Amino acid sequence: MKVLLWAMKLAVSVGLMAWLIHRVDLTEVAARLRDVSVPMLILAPALMMLQALISGERWRQVLLSLDVAMPLGWLVRVHWVGAFINLLVPGAVGGDAYRMWQVHKRGVLLVTAINGVMLERIVTVLSLTIMVSALLPALIPDVPGEWGFRLLAVAGIGGIGCLMVLDRAPPALRRWRLVRGFATLAEDTRRLFLSPRRLLLPMAWSFIGNANLALSAFALAYGLGADLTILDALVLVPPVVLVTSLPISISGWGTRELAMVTALGLVGVPPDLALTTSILYGLTTLVTSLPGGLLWLANSAATEAPAAGSSETRG
Image (cartoon, rainbow, N blue to C red):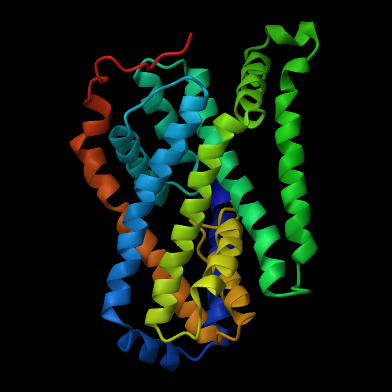
């Protein structure tokens, strides 16, 4: 089954890339790559490297909402290793499983470690849907799919509401370990999302992370000569990131390119330029994830002892 799913994702990535490449003039793509601005080509990876710090802080704030304290530097390293693992394993499951296990190894209950990563993912996707549904119609009135994004945001909020009541299962079912795990997830979801004080910082760091990714894409597009403003990027790139997060392709290849060509086309960016931007964006993501492999090989995250005096367990 896993092989079949991987083959289907590969087919989606290859099929979409082949279709998009067939639509553009490859000589134009090559010309744009030759004329790309070197400073912008340096700025984009720098912003991507900064994303590891932003993601680590977002994860730290979610864990704090669950009464788990972890050093920021350690979380950034573990997150970076997880990003590298995602290059090797289709989807984000491998990297997330690594993050959960590493937190558990530092004395945190496994169910809490799992919930911390799951809730961090939920906060990230929720912030994306809010940004897209709020900002996209403001920039481009009557944009195609506008209501689809709004419905997605409503569905996301509804899904969080469902998570909050997972511990209302009949007593006869609570003997099952999976059901007890859902009950803990419901409790942790309420702890985070029903407390404005706990939710504020994770959401703030999510919005900052989304904006940082948009600026990375802007740097590449601007460096290639696109007539694009920072505001355009802040509005149009989050939908691309949201579509890329769907587990229907290999590391987002193909779906990201289709979404980027469609999104940037709304403000008049030619398909060949948008496709080149997306490919460079994907390569930048890949290159900036490679340091995680060095950290993994050094085994620093796995062997580092817990910091003295930190509150790292939850009973």
